[in-house]
Length: 313
Image 1 (tube, rainbow, N blue to C red):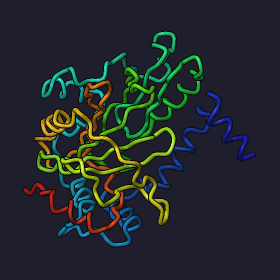
Image 2: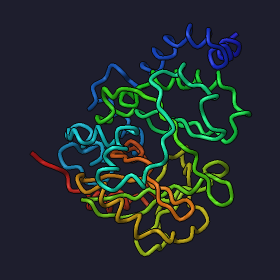
Image 3: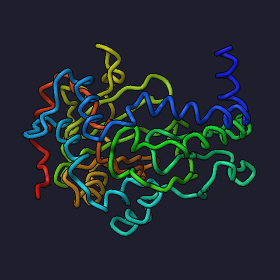
């Protein structure tokens, strides 16, 4: 019976409509929705790192990122974290040439019509993280399944899950953009430039995300760095180092763009793509991994923590 109910919820409109309130109530209980931001952050931090968060004197990067969730209230973050509103910010600060071509937006999942979209595209929500649907060939996709999934994602709150203030109260929207593919027809590598005080300190490269996801970190001279920074499944890293990635020819341009966009913030991760020699903007993140991804060796958490000067007063 349980398997049948789950199937109806996942695969039918009536099941989604009937069971969604129960699923949301369950998720609210699981993520401690009744707890204060501080209590829930402290609980998740202790579960993840095995030590309490030092609110009075945060020293590691993850401690400081979680401290900022409670103490930083910069209204510019709300614009930058919104995956649609940020487009205007990027155009003003760096130029429209860096924007992935926009196809259209939807306020409701039911507005999605494949007939109005090209053969290949990407759909994502503006108010979440990782809630993307890549369509390589719409003739192979189930439009109703996509609509059901985005109905669920629109109703979800990334703030409630991560307690990241910029997402609090953000008006949900679905964004349709052009699908970027490299010369081999694959999703291009994702370059994430971690900036402290407006300067790039390390560059994360996520590769083979559709097959065997791996993650490397490089310095500005493109030397592979001796650490991983990832989610973990017990004692196993979810995304260990992968094969060496060639230094992108557009690296100087990517660094300039990232530092331009990060200039106003104590810490920001600027996500970029390089496709066909052209650099494209992806998103801005202020709390990498929600502040809950572990370093190995763990001392690099302190190394990068020293680079982040917390705003006071």
